[in-house]
Amino acid sequence: MVVAAAPTGAGTGTSKQLQKLEKRVQDGDYYEAQQMYKSVHSRYMHAKKYSEAIELLSSGAVAMLKHGQVTCGTELGLLLIQTLTAAKVPFDNAAIDQIRAIFNAYPRAADSQQESEASNSGVESSEATVAARTRVEGCTSFLRAALKWSIETGGFSRGAPELHDMLGQYIWTESPAPEMMKASQHFVRGNQPEAFAKVVVECMNKCYPSEADLVIARAVMLYLSLGNLRDANRLWDSVRQRLSDSSQDFPDSPLLHFVKFLLSTLERDALPLFRMLRQKYKPSLDRDPSLEEYLDEVAERFYNVQRRNGMQGMLGDFMKMFAMDS
Image 1 (tube, rainbow, N blue to C red):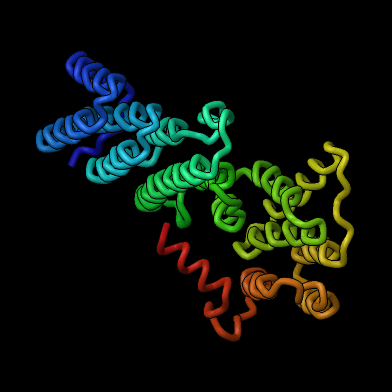
Image 2: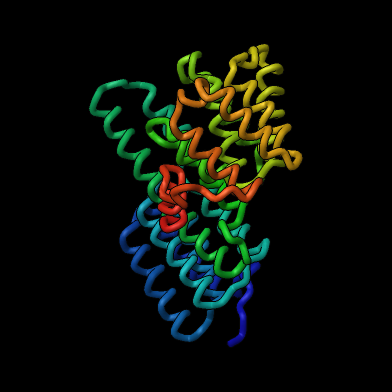
């Protein structure tokens, strides 16, 4: 089968078709436009016109999302991922650009902020929460489908880092309530620890001051639990720099002393020192049971220490669940 490439532009006939459909969207005929997008797409697929089908869906998803039609836009976006798979489109910059264009079209809370500033009624607040949840669920389902496609075609065991960065950022900024753990699970699989550091500092400013050190420790441990010492160090340094730039103090606690020593210890073959640190700082680690789970994973990845209960711990169960969902 001929492998299709992500299209860079549509032909004259396709352009006219796109303009006609986009006019429907602009006129507010969302249902009819959606049915037409799906009907034309079906004809393209039957004729194996994959490039045209991809261009159609990409244009349609963006148009719907820019008009606030999250459900319709997500449906077309998911159909696009299915089409990329059926057409055997390889993972490349052109395909990622199309996915990013759809991601960028998802509404943001700031888009409707001015409209909601005039009133703060409970009903409107509830409606805003539902709308935010719908946006996040839609974007999450679209990008998770894209992640699965990137695993199948791009050779990424955990999915394309660029897609993880997009999803982590959207979950953090658009969820109706802070979702630090969900966002973190994507950031640590991305390639922008400096962007993650910004989120860490924002989370620190939202939590109780006594828990700020836990926010940093969990973020660093997540990287280390994946065997990523480089980005754990980059995150650590970036958090320190961001706090300094904003005239904020870096938390001074035994837990962060442990994290600092741990980062240094993992640079070399020093299992006895690793175990000594865990024992010495156990009272600090006991503040959050997940920290010991992370460290069990770190011991296995860096020092080949088999976990006593395999992957049955809390962290292992969560990571397996995430892998299935993604």
